[in-house]
Length: 193
View 1 (cartoon, one colour):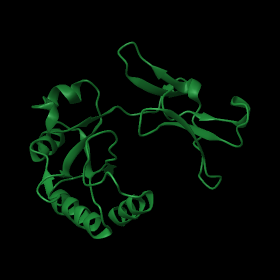
View 2 (cartoon, rainbow, N blue to C red):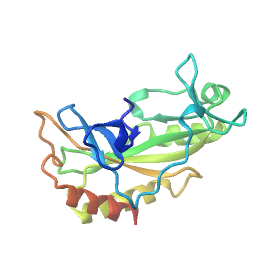
View 3 (tube, rainbow, N blue to C red):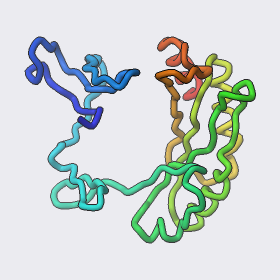
């Protein structure tokens, strides 16, 4: 499964209401109930096509209505943004930075952030940014949001600012390992305000 598939009660014996399949902390597949108050998407799964090269397109009435984008970070090295634009990419989500586990959880800028944003914009690729949060308090989440705002103010960011919440599982203990769902949710809400 794609981890986002919604199942109705008729799909599983004993299931009640709609559920979504997600991966648990130990890699197991879980069916989690969807809250009734959550708005459902109206996408037709038959209109989502996967090309031979693995790219996906959403087609309505014979017309592609999706846009092509990529997600990049300093881990991708030097990017030829002219080639990216020529391949039909319309937007890029560029990692701005991360709150580290070391250095007492200091906010750090991705080493290629500024170069990627400038070169993407110069190539005509629209930009959004992401920040990987390891906030353990609401105050840290607010600090992360201010860090992002400070680092995007000089650029024409037209796509969203996304927060990537890091949850860890397994043997490696990090600063967010024992964070409760309530605290994690409060941190994300504080970041987004």
